[in-house]
Length: 174
Image (cartoon, rainbow, N blue to C red; front, side):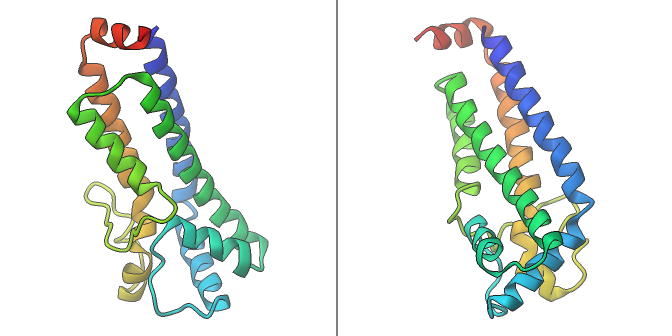
């Protein structure tokens, strides 16, 4: 039973990663959509620092279908990552390590969390693909969000799979 639940979570994660691969191909379009909606919102000074801010831009300041499509794709991936966090919570009560990882994930995918200082590290080069200093400073956090959370989720699964099967099964029963 526990193994099946872990496999379902791994499949859910693989689906998110596949969607993210498509989103990566749209990164320039995503940054341009943020640029357009920030202009429309007359909000060119502060960085795009939260999922909620992206949602607000899409809901109130987006006036073309291409921008809406790519912003929605970003928001959908964030929603899916949030759902996977909830699924992780139901798999087992957790260890200190898995709970720490899960708390980081949940905080990062929270709509109001400030992402302005978040930066993806090697091997992710999403921030390096941003064209200029302004783009890095204004969009680095939101473009780093998905790869950082996906890495944490993979780490959560790896740590969970190291737990003894018997412990996982006992945790499932309670």
